[in-house]
Length: 492
Image (cartoon, rainbow, N blue to C red; front, side, top):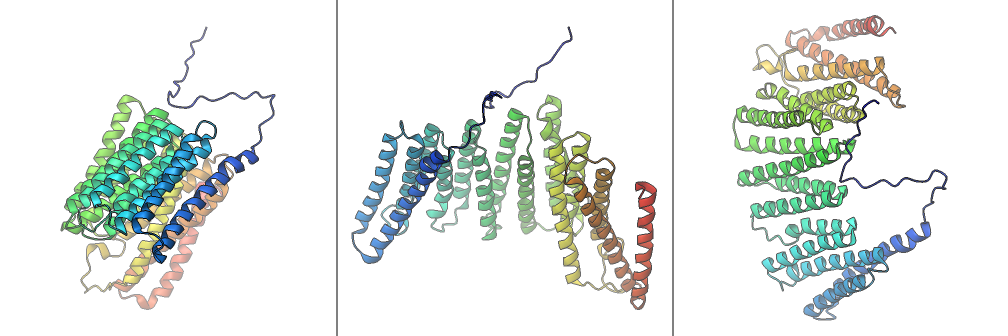
């Protein structure tokens, strides 16, 4: 008999239940959903708002002493928690809602005790909130409810901001956040709660971006740069571990992986530019990114694991490698990065029949388009002088500048994607409309790219009086060439 091979199943994936095809599909029990789930969550939100309003009202009108207000707040939280614990066996969903509301009240009352009344020192308030976060995570494991874990996650990330005294000790904030991230990621993989992974990703990068926008990056360069590296590596390794376990790659996963690498690189570039003069160190930093991704791709290739992710890492490696040379010159090399990534992702998606890569390439191409439009807009606003006697560098010469090179590469890549999609279409409903849209974008970008350089050349060569004639001749020649290419290579 012929030899058959069975595919390896994912040991972490939940077992799929096989439905009897002769049984009717079960309809959603809306009465149970509204009674046990929706009304319960609305109720706990009303209780929390009531506690907030009650505390605020008592403060404004001095009804009771500050200590009694805090005691009553803690008692309310304890009451909700005890009630939830007593109802866990019979009404687990409602019990989980009560417990999550109790933990929220504990966070709020502790913050009031520290920030408003000064009853707690910063160290004690920090310890209490850290314990609340740990207990909330344990409760989420006990109830198997991701909602409780999210409340603990939000509270854990909010602790440093709630208890901040503007001491400027950013290293403590970064170390605390890094520890929270590791715990959250372990929990998300253990319970297969992807929403925790996404939430930790968003909160952490928003934290780093907000801290960067506040300034003092030169004074705390080492702390910012180390936390940038730690955050990138934490999510990078976590993503790789997840992909090796599932061997599947969704569009959201791919976009998150790209965003993690680009956030790290973007913040790293901004930090390096603030403390260094020249572009050599920036080129070394870019090359280090390319080598890192290449090493990971080589590891996947040798171990023959995470094949879907391997190609995405290869794309990142090649994209950063293409930046090493042009980054030595001043200019808009970000457009080049997006364009090369889009082209490589599309080629891999079609060549390896990975539809997720192809769809990601469309998103990346949209980013490249936005970046190119921003580059053109900046160039028009600058209005640099292009006289032969002016101080014009090589990067400003017509047909010999980085913006022209980036625009041309963008047009070539967009044209290639359009041609392949037209000649080898997929059976997708959006493909035909996308081909038309990309064709318009490609032709328009190429037309404007050469038109811009011709305009610069006419100013440079003192031919600005004949600029309208040059424009008419160029337009006629361009469309004649476009029609000839369509008839010759496309057949239309």
